[in-house]
Image (cartoon, rainbow, N blue to C red; front, side, top):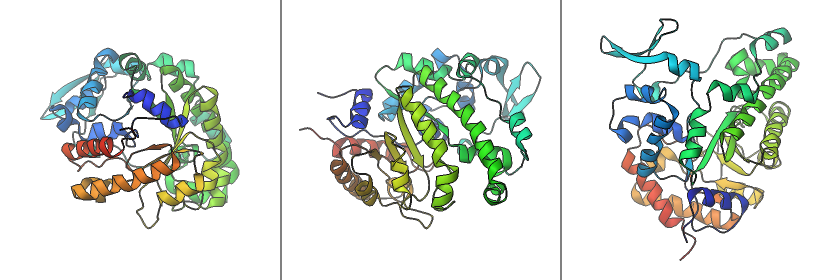
Length: 378
């Protein structure tokens, strides 16, 4: 008998029998943004209108997403605060669309080139000492975060889709340090002022723990930790153990204490630190596709971790899904399903988010082939 997506994901993460391997990709909410017009048939500005809808109306779109792209997980977006949403409206001026903030009269331009609408990394340093840390890193309790309305869409999705596995998450403390000291500065400060970085990381951890508690209360089945910038192409194993590992360990422990599944995400090379990552004892691990001069050999990773953690596949989203032939895609899925059968717990996936240039029919082909080739029962 076919399982619901939620049943399938829980069974996979816990090592119980499933009808087929689940199918998912990292950061589905990015896919929905990048392909909004193709998925919905609506102009780009409506993506911004969707973000300020009432929760009950907002979550209706997820049913349409699921019908077109039936992944086994659902990733509702974290919302603006309720106060912000209620104050904003969309207006058009000179062929451009803007949020108009009725509280302040401010006009906020909306970038309708959705794949390029996100801003780049922060390079400005705001924190120079412990006093600055206390001033800039404001810890808000989980109850305050929930009361603000930022998790309204997740709560509404949990009610609307009881059979879907909901996954949202937090960012590792190491990357969050860049928000306060700048991305480039962070790496020099590991040498020049490590005590400040540890103090900043601990303060960020306090806030992140509250975010984890809010996500758990809102209805997530699993919570991911995206431990960005801590891979072999960024920092040494020694620095990983000093500046990342203890903080991620605290997050994983909190996720488990709340009765939720913990997922780790590493975009970058991890072959030299797989043992340390596995010792965090998360339930599931996503590693990036081999690229940018490093190799993440999933078969070797599987051999190192055994059945201690559920692995996600890391099929190349550009070379295979976006640009490969149908046979390339089929071959890649078959190879990774074989790995999945060896480790027992496995999710068919790409090792990075689906790209904006991948057409919707091609994404659907990936899902359909994964359903077919990942079947585990007659």
